Length: 296
Image (cartoon, rainbow, N blue to C red):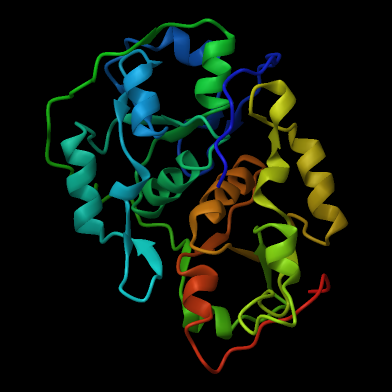
């Protein structure tokens, strides 16, 4: 995945889409975060590249690498870490269940969306993503620093009052999808979705509609998410509306799908599942088929 430049010129608009699972916005603006920069109830998590974090990051932000929340199996499949491992990672960053976690990266939510999904999955009550991330923050000339932030470690204990959200699906679930009730969305690139007859393991899961994850990002406006209505209209064109009972998103490894999960939550979709193993796991099963071309 190519890295994006921070040298962009953009504009700012204030918009909040509230998280139906909590009392905070799914996506928050740089203006808002600037006023909360020293708020002890908020933990800012930087998920940009480690070298970028060392150069500069948002004031008070603790760094969490994408690799800390995923594990690669011997067969190449990438999956989430166990709940207990995730709790240890969060505790090591000084995060408690009652903290409002605000996540950002420098790639339009490419990494941040995955952690957002993970936190919602374990029932963490208050979690948001910074719209435009580090790019928007720099364009606004807001406070940055280059010191490594170390928060006092704690023990993360999942709040028993917070019921886990069933937002994960496995291979068995994918194979049993009822397309009358569930819509499957492939968020990879056009070439990945289309596939090639020369490659038996290319193409898409039959029935899946194509909507590339980066449709949601406006590069000309500092990596901000596009306006909700624009994205809703895009989804309507491929036959995906809020009236659908269930949505399942996948990509190659579950990485890009995390960003799309975030996008759909921002748009107000509620019953969304992420196929963690995605195509890498799907194609390990010799009994499955992939479809070539641009038709679902």
